Image 1 (cartoon, rainbow, N blue to C red):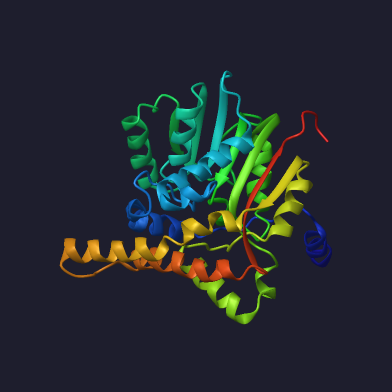
Image 2 (cartoon, helix red, strand yellow; image 1 turned 135 degrees about the vertical axis):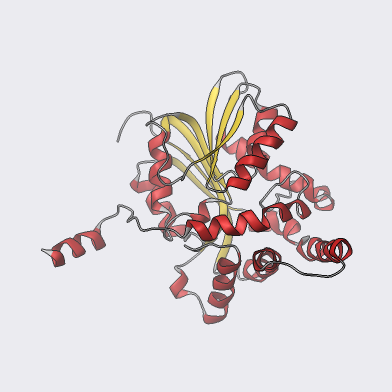
Amino acid sequence: MTLLADTTALLSTEPVSHPINQQLIKSYYEIAGMDYSAWSKNFNMHFGYCKHWTDAFNLEKMLNRMNEVALEKLQVPENQAVKMLDMGCGMGTVARFIAHRVPLAHITGITIVPLQIEYGNKLAKNENVAQRVAIVENDYEKTDFADESFDFAYAVESGCYAQGEGKGLLIKEMQRVLKPGGRFVLIDGFLKRPAKQLPAFVKRINDKICECWALTEGFPEINSFTKHLHTQGLQEIIVKEISWKIAPSVAYVPYVTTKFFFNEVRKNKGLNLAQERWNNVMAPALGMLLGLCRPYFGYYVISGQKPITKF
C-alpha cells in the first residue's frame, strides 16, 4: 500500500507540499530589507528593463520600466474598478506604481515579512494611495482569500521563493484566487534545466546565490514551471526571455555595491555588517556571473489568463 502511494505521488502532476524555511526568509528581509534603498530610492526590489538605449543612463527609470512591463502584460483597463493581487509584494513598490497609473485599481500585496508590511503600508500612505493599496501578512501558496477573488495577479521576482523547481503550489493558488478570465504575469530569473543537471561551476554559483538570497527552494526551472501553468488549465500563455533587456540594470551592481560600502564606512566608521547584509551585497554580484551563463539561466516574463469557463 505504501509502495503504491509513493508511486502514485511520483507520477502525479499535482505539486507536493513540504515546509519552507520561512524563518530564514523573514530573517533575511528583516535585517537586509532596508538596504534595498541603495538599489532603489523607491524600494524597487527587482532588476530593470531597458526599453530605449537612453534608459541605460538612469537605473530608477529602468526599474520603473519593469513595473510598466508587468502592467502592460496584465492589460488592466484604466476605466474599470478591478481587484489585483501582488504575490510577494516586498515594500509594495509595484503595487504603488500600478495604483498611480490605474486610478480604479485596488491592490492587495501579500508578504510574510513584518518589516515589509509596516514600511510598505507607510510608503503607500506617504504617496496617498493607502486607500487602494494594502499590504497584509499571507502565505502566497495558501492564502486566506476566497476562490475567484481577484481580476489580476502578479509576482515580480518573488515567485522564486515558492516550493519546488516548478513552483506548482504558487501557480495552483494563483489559479484558485483569479476570477474566470483573470490575467496574470510572473517575472523572474529561471534555470533553463533542472539544478541537478547544471555544470559544476554553474551549480556552485547558483547554490551560493540561493544561499545569499535565502532562496531555500532555488530558482524556478522554466520547463517545469510552464508545465504547471498548463496543468492548472491556464491559457494564452506567453513566455518571453528578456535577459538582454535587463543587462544594463545588472551592470549597475558594481557601482551600487561600491557606493553602499563607502556609505556604510562613513556612517559607522568601519564596515560591520550582519551576515544577511553581506549576503545581500554578494548575491547581485554572483547574479552577474550566473546571467552570463546563458545556456543555463535566463530572465523571463510569463503571462497568461485563467479560462472564462472551467476546463
